[in-house]
Image (cartoon, rainbow, N blue to C red; front, side):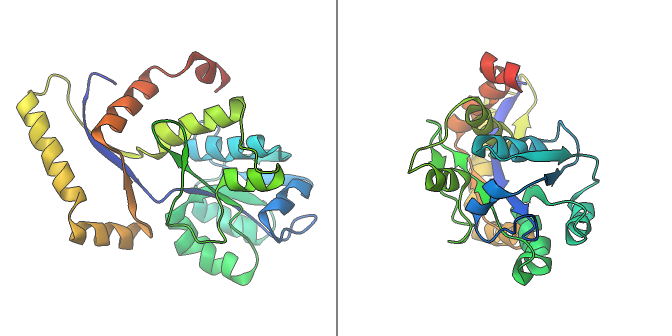
Length: 238
């Protein structure tokens, strides 16, 4: 993987956890999730990045839940949540704004529990401006419940790795191994030019429901190394 030449990468918006409000006991605020009994978290398959991130979020928080994989897309999970068959799922901001917001959240049937932040090269969570004031980041909910203390431990470290490797670079452009350096530089320059194009930015925001989040060349190359050579403790844990 690291033999490829990194050109550029980015992601649209981010990932978010959505639970039904009509669980036991009912949820009114994100902190209420800690009291929920028998929470059923829908998913696609155990190796799906959305599922892994969602489960890690609950593990970081210490939420008790049952993971129910096998659903074929968010379009199948939405009606299951409306019918009370399942209690929550992790999805992207595009699905949140286009489907869950008008059909569930706007009607008080679900809430945004938290969004999963991206992290900078030092591992510090970065605020995502595409989420509203009443849509907190995971670590903000954790801090609220733990007197301002930041999350820590193996679940948090694994989540940071997942959000960096599979989240921040969800859309990655690479050139084949041994591509001439002048060609690589030309492609990188063209990518940077496209990133700065306001017409393209507007079109991407319209289609995805959020702004694109890009990584720098330095970040991208570092993330490729992280993907190819993960921390042994994180690799063993996952």
